[in-house]
Length: 235
Image (cartoon, rainbow, N blue to C red; front, side, top):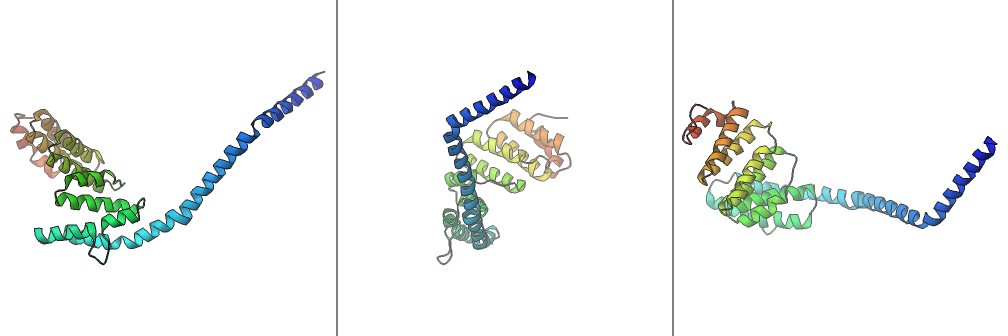
């Protein structure tokens, strides 16, 4: 009797499975096919499009990098202005960062060019463009990311968008709190900015954070005088 019940149970399971397959075979096939096509499409994109594009971009970006290096080390303001425009637009024979971004969008090299463009536009005082390009920049290199956030803060400060500016200075300090030099530098910049816009308590809190969290840094060495002028003596 037990064997008959077990056999009947097995038969019921088979029948239910068959019925399920008959009712759902088309959706299952469609979904499976879609997954296969998506996976195949991703592999084609990765190996036939993305990786070759990355390689071409990496081979081409050195020209823009050279322009940016020249800009960063320019000996005078007039030279710096000329070189900033060269970074952005090239020299007639070679393309600049803007065209590079358009041509190689989505690549790591294009991402780096967003940083170059943002830095040059900050020097040229085109602050909306600083914000636009640097908000599209992202990197795991924390010091560079901090600098990018700091430049966005500078651009907002120049536009008198004080809350945004202060938030981005804080953001620059928070990227990697283990980086004592960079974090203390941007906390100090945030504190000074908070002072200038009348946010005394924010400035005090930022200065105290430098003193507490980064006591061995250059910024901490002189922080008491900044606290003192805000009335925080003996802290």
